[in-house]
Length: 446
Image 1: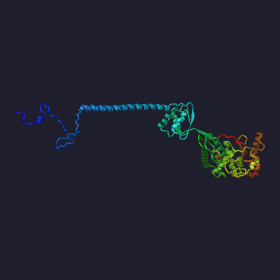
Image 2: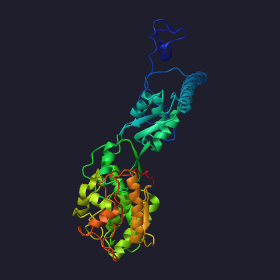
Image 3: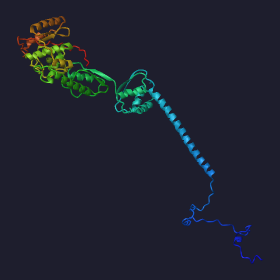
Image 4: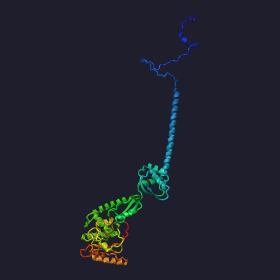
């Protein structure tokens, strides 16, 4: 049959065995990005597609990709670990080196002192130590101090650093706060003015003393202070020590007529202190004054004449004369009865104890014995014998003609309202006329 009469074959029109030269190329299928839902009970829907065909990835290629990714992470972590290890090694080496510097002996050849000012920081302290030759590496010192956590415990003051001191030892010295202390010894028997003058002359103390303290309010002792301490601070310490000492000694006192208050005790102790510079004699001198007070006799103590004339200056600069003995001052115990108006010096602890607890004696008189001590006597007859010995020694030593002896003073006493012995008139004074200059005393340390 003729091909023309045959009906067209749909499949043949698309392409036969050879496909036909004139057949158009096949068009790609388009898949809807929003396919219709599958009916219930059908196969699971295929995953949505963005309309682009991708080549299928083989399992082997995926493994290789994951292996490369894991290898890169391992390499990164390995490098980081190596870096951190090197960093830790360097830090450990630096720490070891710094610690060895901090602990090893320093460059200081001989002991030296360094003044650390108030409110200095750690860096400033380190620089001060370097300038003084105590340390070589101020920044290592600063780091070490902070590492030990004592940067806020370093104290100002004057410190002594021994030779070859390490930075660690220097840190411990500063953190201890044990700065150099300087002593100042105040002898017993000085007036408040004389004590203030000594403090003013001390080169390591600072500041002015605005007012002279009241007589008898300062306790003579050895006081330690650091460089830069103010004079007012030393005065305050002396006053506090005096209050504490008097309060304690007053509790154990013996009853003595006329000694009714702690202030009376200080007054009596000041007379004891000025009458003798020999510690062993203080109780006997105190007993003489206590016995005279019990008998109603005037004390007739020569140092009270001097204080009434010159006050806190302390020394008259010459011998006493008859006019001095007649001087009507509230301190002159040749004129006034009982205790003088106030202390004539600052007594020490031993004089306070002697005045509070005088021994039981019969002595009413004492006179210089020419050796720096005194001869004591219970009666006027014995006292006059002691006076005669004293006058003989004075003549042998070339005493000035106008110098008064105790019995000379006694002859003037009735005219001046002086003491009258219960048994005899013209009684000799209880004490001898002191030299024009204070006898040197060995400073007493507490």
